[in-house]
Length: 340
Ligand code: KG4
Ligand code: ZN
Image (cartoon, rainbow, N blue to C red; front, side, top):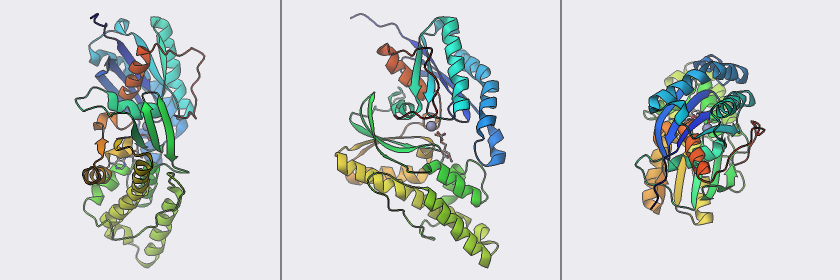
């Protein structure tokens, strides 16, 4: 048998507020560097113009660090993968332009990657965990996306459910903001919820057809509820913080969870792979794990570093496309909207 030469892929991700670069040797991650932008904390959300400026400052040191940590030199690279979309256009432009310039400078192929495919295919990174078996349901729950996808093979994906408005992570963050928690609020709510009662306060579950979900009405219900209770008691939030976090988290999870169950029943699939920042939520993980045992599902949850936005997940798609010689042209532009 002829042994295939290993390939080294540099991957660049800049779709939102994290500047990330990774180097993969085939499907193995050699380095996974990230520069988070703390500047947005003061605004309680990502400010697009500030994000793209910070990407410009971060991209060279982050790429340099990823190549050094991988223990290779840039001349060893075989291809460069970059996030083409979806995301914030100004942010995407920084990564896209940088990837194009470097690929021209090194005379190596360029590979475009859909960020959403990256979240779903992150499960194929060689990290010691078994890969999902096709077909499986890919669930992406993040600050920008909430979707249920039927994954038939690496590049045949069909979105069968999505949010009609806000993403689940956005709902965590917006509820956290009115509770006075820092940004992003998801991890704070998760931590505080552990000490609270999830049924202390009841919030309505919106009725949405099919496998779609909605989160914007929930956020308004929480704001109105807090406003009403604060009129009677100024200290309502402080006195009930843990119970509020537990009840909010319970409902946010319930909204997507009922649709995941429905999607599995409808498709007959028993394998789920979850990704995106909210996949780090301990309530969601626990619920998936216990229900999986009851119902005989197989659940894949990637390691934390590959769950939130990162470049390793862009690199694995790059590697899979490199094997097919599926390269990008230099005129393929960054695009804010890109279906899976
Ligand atoms: O995937 P990600 O890093 O970036 C986007 O593509 O949006 O996800 C960030 C989101 C934020 O909304 C953050 O609050 C949420 O993931 N998040 C969590 C947790 N950790 C991060 N939400 C709930 N519980 C957590 N433990
Ligand atoms: Zn993402």
